[in-house]
Image (cartoon, rainbow, N blue to C red; front, side, top):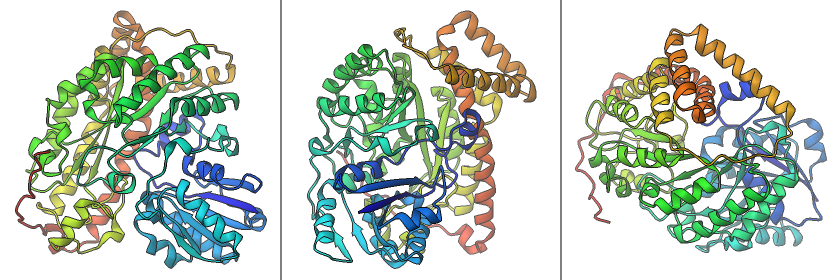
Length: 531
């Protein structure tokens, strides 16, 4: 069979990085790891063609070539995902869909015309789907019925299907699941609270495969909580550190982790040795009461700013996420987030309005309280979305705080101040001798540097501040010069994206009635978990 694998477009968001990607000559941030894993599970005698719609368009030739179309995506990709299903049916193609979005909301894909719903984890349900095809079935739904995949049996993804030149970073997965209980998160629903992991041998084989195909840039370990299973992650890090040393440290690594990373000095040290450089942390809010209400109690055990400083001092650059709109949140959440980010010195920050996602405990509670007037079909995850439920503060107030928070955080002078603070706090890292023979990449980096020097050093009103910080770093701590420049490059996306947030949110507000804008509910606080 000839299988056309389609990955839907992402809307503009914190993670879309348009400004940065244009600067460095890439088309999109990360490859569709889900689809190349699916391709590895399917019978290998089949033919595969991958189209990442974030990098290229589906052509008439692609449609004509395919015997079967497979589409997978996340909830943020749903508009284009549903459109791709409809296009496939217009070309008289059989369509199978899977991934976290349709696993949570299968009825949308079914209404768009999908023939097969391959839900839950593919290691379990794809073999069932293949058996149905071999029996000649033309439709069906396949579920894992509560079973979770054995990650030690997951194959090496088909990285050979990718055009490496399209991507800024390469993706790799070590684990699924998270041990915590955050009310708003769907990860524990989709993948469970007992993190399941691949073996170090599996991960090293994937690293080697990516290396053999010629990749020599950044890699993102896409786990929702890389340290969810500390007992398993430490042997992996030791093995990765040895592999990196043997191969000349070809990959700098980024991942997502919970803030309790700060409580484990050994784990921090192992991540540095394995050449992790960046960690994305869900901080959510500096308001301890809100953290307890949403059951993110792991963020209440020590002062959050202190934990961020601990991680930064170990040598890891921190990116942080925040949410506005928790129940019983007091006015002024925007300023509290801004003050916290300034204190903690976090250069890159994602701020969203709270969304009740399908299947989450938050969605269940709000439904019971009658606070879902729009139902869950409006749930989404990009940063210009309003809340999809009746909040405990007027929606207009939440939206204005959301706009102001994003705007103030990416004022050039404020951004440069906390980036400089972060760089001066950043712990010294071991100096690795890299094997480099990448002249084209080095020339591109040089051209990017000149563009950044022009924009930050001459065009913007913060130019004197930029040159001052740059001079202080060169004189006092030259080891962090590259980090400072990289942060300034990322700023090119966030500085312009704040305008998109403002315009999009204001457009949505203009469509609402005065009653909708001022509607809120006074509701008893949900029971605070003592877990």
